[in-house]
Image 1 (cartoon, one colour):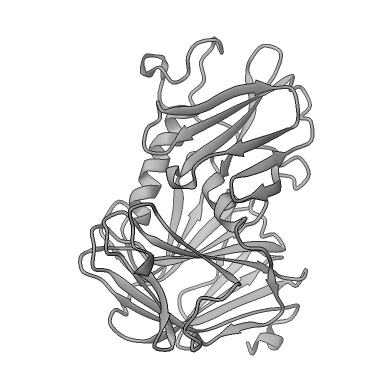
Image 2 (cartoon, one colour):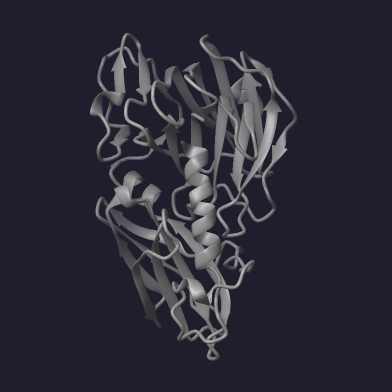
Length: 350
């Protein structure tokens, strides 16, 4: 399911990022496209990036400093399933804009800075879907957070989301664990949580995993997304089997490649598949060196993975447990969740 969505996003962003010599032409007319086209990323210096400055369940506001040479900013909302379905397309001279949309539409938002000749200086994609969902969670968790899922109720630290047409019972806390099911095709269950690292260097996320697949298209995992600059995100999949190009088998990380094309970099930590059994999965993030370590049952698997150089891992993060796979019948469980932050690894028991 998730990989399927990634492919759709790839098509959307690539096409809608193709800009013409005459900016007055309709960029959503298929006859106007000239492929391939590569656009530049927004100035990724930690200062000039657009960031989410306000969010409510129905909308969110993105703000940015004025970019040198830019005389206007073009704002486009494009439905992910069709590069030619424009929900909104406006221009502004302001350096902020408020987006609103139905979160079920999974809208992609683009901000493009243009000079006086209409040429694109740089562009940025914003994942409105993650913004809208995380805005439903009132508080960031911090320090050491644990949950053994034994009280039988999904706590206030989480936001449960089911796509329209899905079943609310596809996420349940019962029998001492959190369980995710896919009972309606393409209506995946998601669980959101916000975490503040309190400016610590390291973040450790550990929990027990159980995975069951019904076909070879299973890509359940945990997404780590920056709360403000949220097109910096990656998925860690402790156990997956997804026969598509590129294949994802075993334990992998899928990282947004920061090219604004919607592509992901796939790195395999281990080819071993761990279906239909409980095991401990652990992710350790080094925010300073941008390094990811993955552990299975207490032992590190694969080599350290270094995120692309443009990446920043912010202090405030959105965690999303997403249960995915094509068709129905897939199931996963998590238990004994523990999240910690520290300045030295020994404080995390490493």
